[in-house]
Length: 99
Length: 157
Image (cartoon, rainbow over all chains, first blue to last red):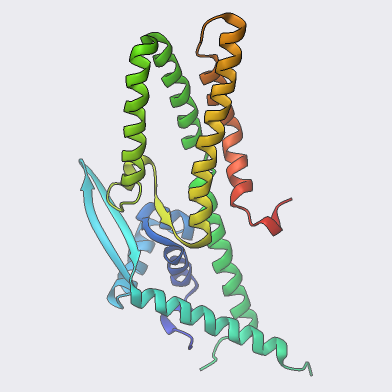
């Protein structure tokens, strides 16, 4: 359980947290949830996709474009490990006697 | 390895928790979908009333088929949007959300049937009054109820 450098960024952590609580999520849902602009989310998703943390499905429903996002197994393991590492840091700081 | 300050780690954990909670809430207590559901119930009751008992039976079965189809589509990342769904939640939030749908359907049905029985007893015929009442209840009480429902029991006021 180690801190994931990619998830040390709060924005990427938020995105992965949103995707971790869902089977799939609409691009606009993640954008609103993370409080990002379209371009900012696209940029972050690009990075997460490069590391195979996120899968992007682009398609059309009728003539309307539809982009949905899904966490990969690698991404799910990464956020679980990262959150476990954060919890351990917090727990250790609480256990440590105050000077 | 531990390059993160404990206070930053705690802030990140709180932020993750907050984002998840807000997202789950955003899926269920937006006013728009509840208002649409309320209007749909009222419109359906008017349609039933206008079409008479025989056609009403066909309409009921038609609506059951539509509901089953919507439930199936709702699971799909590609087609879920057609049913107004923007994400399929998993874990505790997902279970709460699916239970909420079932509870709302059962409560709306019980309310509809009891008002319908009272109206036909008092006025001798069924009118779309029960549909209007259920529609209003859904549109007005839906969002606050959904918000309350999705809140963890220990955080409920």
